[in-house]
Length: 265
Image 1 (cartoon, rainbow, N blue to C red):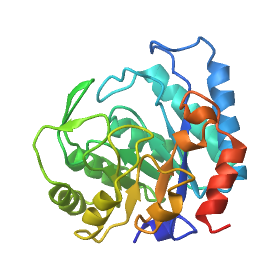
Image 2: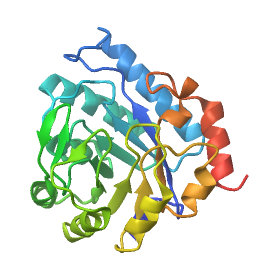
Image 3: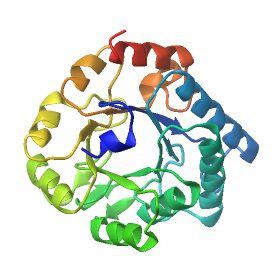
């Protein structure tokens, strides 16, 4: 189970930093420094709240373009991740919507992050961005080409949220495909952000693969113990935010309550 080599705990809690909207996107506020400052504040709060890892993503760039962000967006994300790397020794991850796997691997490599989250890894999906093709062959070759001294792990979604599979593979089929395609971990989610990941889906996937299986949405203070009884880890975003709103600041109180509950406190 490769998660055990990346994280110091057996069932890691990965906190999400939802970046404010980046330049060139509809909701960009015009202040680059504010984006950087907010991101670093959230990194500090998540670390103080005792999460086991942090993933940084451009979630507020809605509506997303598919496949490729702009150079200025890439550059700003690189600055933020580099500064975050100086702020924390926790494992860092990168997620670039929607499915810009090349940017994710490049950012992780250049900024010394250790993992990426890829939504359309083995499934062709239909989203508001259009039809997004799977990228497992390309991303694994690109990772190999860079041949980093610090391995970059691939956390691969199957049946990703906010999308529909173009081909109706079952969860079991998609999970087996992801394992065969060299994913390091598999992410299972509910339909959208904040919607609970069905425990039955987690169990279904765990029954057919030898990889760690993470709950990628909807884990909260009320269900975290139940979820971690099945999942090998959780990725938590909205449950850490004031009022559960991804646009709001991460709350130290919410993070601390969550991690304490998850760890049996």
